[in-house]
Amino acid sequence: MDRSDLELALAVRQHGSLSKAARALQLAPPVVTKRLSALEADLGVRLFQRTTRRVSPTTEGHALCDRAIDLLQGFSAIEDELRERQSEPSGPIRMVSSFGFGRLWLGPLLAQFQQRYPQVKIELQLSERLPDLANEGVDAAIWLWNPPAQIAAEWISRKLAPNQRVLAAAPAYLRQYGTPTALEQLSQHQCLVVRENGGETGQGQRFDEWQLTRVGNARLLHIPVKGSLSSNSGEMVRDWCMAGHGIMLRSLWDIAAQLASGQLVRVLPDCAMHDADIHWLAPYRAQMPLRIRLLQEFLATRFREEPWKSVNLPGPAAPPGSRPTP
Image (cartoon, rainbow, N blue to C red; front, top):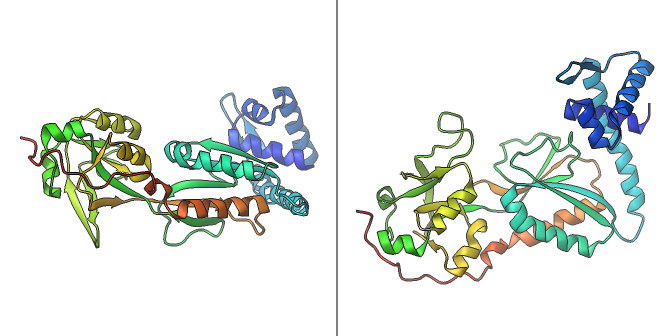
């Protein structure tokens, strides 16, 4: 049994299919089938149960794969140590982030980092689901995350920047319906809602109220809201808001450019929702490779100042109107 056998077993467990594992390993499916059968024959145990629909690991298969993760990380650590003897960091970094934040803020910074260290190769995967970083071979994630009180020993978590959602609307909407001057007036407006986290009957957030705080006051205010438009897509809600269909609650990093250009206007600017903060998440390693340590510090430095706040935001403007929706 060698390193390629361990990689093959992990690929089969991850994908649950010999054909998908073959594509991931860039091998022909018959080669994967033959190599897996040979590995099982050499070990004298059955590692995977095969059906027409799925390939599932046996108890022995799980044990092999769990041990394979440690062994492959050991191989990588040795390679990283040898690379670090060079004057410049090199090697691959696999990153994952959510679609919006990854595209707007992480992607450009990763390109800057790669230009600074040309021997580093970065792969960025954008996803709506935080993967199992260790089992899927991901070095780190930049994720909007609320860490639990106690983080498992196999995780590394570092807060990079706070995240807050702010109230915003298009000037056309405010001209037509007036600008609310108190939180209680939101109930008289069309509020655009993002429906996430499993729906109203699941374990996620409520969609008929926004949880807001005022500047200088940590007390959480539960504000009832209603509206005729809602979506599971934050981008869709943002488009509706920019088209003048209502007031939305959206992350400041996501709409900083629209606020700066005047396409959107802050509503009740002393109020915000303090949401899941922006974190660096990574599987635990006894020795973090130089290239990953450098990237972590690079991103921590860049995000510490919340760059979306340095977009040329306009100063407070006179509200287009003050009358609530009839």
